[in-house]
Structures are given as structure tokens and as C-alpha cells.
Length: 390
Ligand SMILES: [Fe+2]
Image 1 (cartoon, protein in one colour):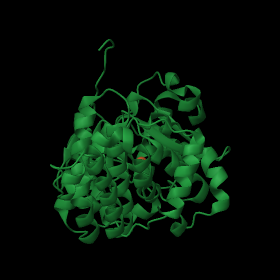
Image 2 (tube, rainbow, N blue to C red; image 1 turned 60 degrees about the horizontal axis):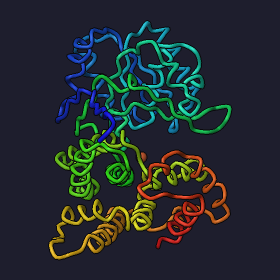
Image 3 (tube, protein in one colour; image 1 turned 30 degrees about the horizontal axis):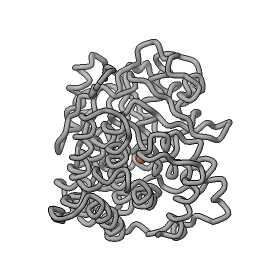
């Protein structure tokens, strides 16, 4: 090995039922006093949000709530959050919800610490180097088990003027604390539990095979695969099963820790399918993942061969190719059991959208770290195969 590697796992994670009650202690530890609580309008009405409010009020933590985050957060949402943060003289940020409020919280921290407009920090235009001042502390409180944004260093934001998604990334955007409280996820509907859970599984599988040297993340990804396969179906079928909910939260967090390595072609397709067809990100990944795995099979067979035992299948007498093929078949069956349609056609994607989806998928950087080189025509073929559900 000729180069020096850096392995970094900077987030303090508090895991367990009732962990939300630890937030006032976290605020003390971080030596701040008045957080802006960021969420979205639908979450504001949930038991999860009420629990957080109660915890803050009972501990007399002064705070301001900003709940105007869109499902795909806009740069204007972040600007409005900044106004609430400044007007309220806040000194820290709590993001509670799915990926959108958490990403908004992280993007707000950049503006609060560095000023300017969010477009100045667009990662594709080298904006990360302009994040030079320290950011206010962020506490991430996920209420879904999928994106793992609570341990990630990036925020995905939609430009309101250019109508495209862009990323803002910096190591200091990683939340100071992640609160993994399974009780906050029990009200997530079955179809979202399924889709977000498959996103977590996709993160673990794509990061395990991404061609980047990071054996620590590889080990985390394998455990994340075990948890997602072992507990997703239970979480979908029994929403109050706190053991299943807890393991899915861990699978999501482990997936996001692992994908600091990077992701693969399923995510390029999924990002494009969301942008062009409005498809839910995890749902798109769930349908594309087995198709991409089949494409990768010859070069990723040893990693995929690790998967069948987590479905209870003994692979002792099998070749790696055989075991890998079984892994793909089992993931298709898992999709079916948790109510994920087998094809993009079934979820409303139209054949006349193929050109645009392919173009946008090719522009997305994730496929550049797919375990197998993936050209534009490969992406088109993967898209058409996923559309047919083959
Ligand atoms: Fe994802």
C-alpha cells in the first residue's frame, strides 16, 4: 500500500428507546442554549415531534421551530430557515424528520456559519473549499430509517432557479450528535418503511462494492446488510416492533457511514428517476438494485456471495457465482414481500422518459464509483431492464 488512508467516524450516536430525552443533555454538552428545530409540516403533527417538543419544554430549553421544509428541500427553504435562525438569535440546530429536514438543517449550518448564498457552496462547482468558518452544532434526529443523513457530511438541495438538485458537502456538516430513537419511527407508514428500508439496504450493498479502500466501512456495510435483511420485513409488517425498528435505524445509519466510500449505478438511476418522474428515492433504488447487481455480478460476486446466509440460506457447497445469483433472487423476493412493485413500468415511469432519465443518470456522479464501469448505454440498458422488471 503506497498511500496513506484516512478513516473518520466523527458522529456521537445515542441509540435506544427514549433517546430523544437525551437532547437537553446534548445541548449542554455542546455548550449552546437556543436551537432552531427544523422539520416539515407533516411531521410537525406527529407523536415523534410532540415527544421532542415535550422534552425541550420540560427541560426549559428555549427554542424556535421552523417547519416549512419541502419534500425535496429548496434553497429558498434554507434561506427562510436562516431568517428564522437569525431572528430567533439561535446558536444551534436540531433537524428532526426524514432526509429533507436533516439536509436542510445541515445546509442552514453552512449559511449560518459562512454567509453568502447556498449556490456558492455547490459541491460540483468546488464550493466545499469556500466553507471556511466554523458551523453551529447540529443534532440529527431521524424519524425514518433510510437516508442516514444524521451521520453524513452532505445535503442535497434543489435550486429554485435552475430546477436541479445540487449537493453541499463538508466534513463539518456532519451532525455533532445523532439521536437514534426507535420509538420515533413507529408511526412511519408501511410503504415508506419498505421504501426507505430498501434505500438503507442499497447504501450498504453499493458502498460495500464501491472500489475504494476502506475496510472499516466494508465491515460496517456487511453488518448493515445483515440488519436490513433481518429486520425490514418485520418493521413493515409490525410497525410497533421496536426491536425491528431499532435494527432498521442502525442499518440506515451504518449504510450512511459506509457510503462515505461512495455509491453506485442504482443511485444514479434513482436520483434521475426522482428528478424526472418524481419517484420516491428508496422505491426507485429498490426496483433498480437487483438489476444493477445482475449487471455487476461478474466483478462483485464475492461480496454478493456474503448475502444469502442473512436470508437463512446455506451457501457452503456453492460457487461465488451461484451464491451471488441467489442473493439477487432473494432481494427480488424481499421486495415482493414488502409490497415493492417489480418494475418501473408499474410505478408509472413512461418509455418516452428514457432519454431524459438516461441523460440525468449519466450526469449523476454515483455511477462513476459503481464496482463495474458503467457507460451511458449501460445505464440506458439498466433502466429499460428495470422498467420491464427483468
Ligand atoms: Fe439513497
